[in-house]
Length: 177
Figure 1: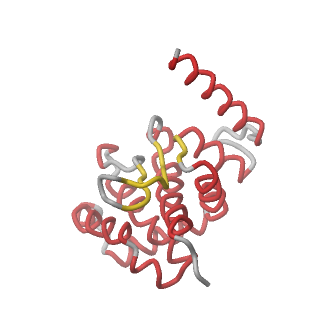
Figure 2: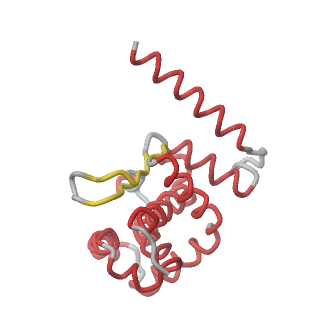
């Protein structure tokens, strides 16, 4: 099966975002994920929810690997050729020695996280294709809607996401005046 670069990028970036969310939790507030062209790197996609400053080096490594693992789960060998995956592996090489894991163990742990949160990753990827960019609150709401509740056990529905987006648009409109 052939996939578009946009779909490949959406799965990759959603993998990063959801694993970062489920690893770091609230520490990704203010961050975003996008499938828009990344002019800095000359390709599609970016997930700014990844930063080693969170202090959880293992979580950072797992988040970096999540894009590749999500791609591989969906696209098989095409994930190996992804420029984003190659860039992520370069960063993983730098931080992996500080985790006490080897590459195989890190990929195994990431595969477990991606499998556990697969429905959330697919839902975030679908929304990325529709909206091109999501902020951390949107990622969290979409992921929570997929499982039906937030971390505190409170129900989360599409109404919550729509209300958030409407409030965000109103706030942006006020900022433009």
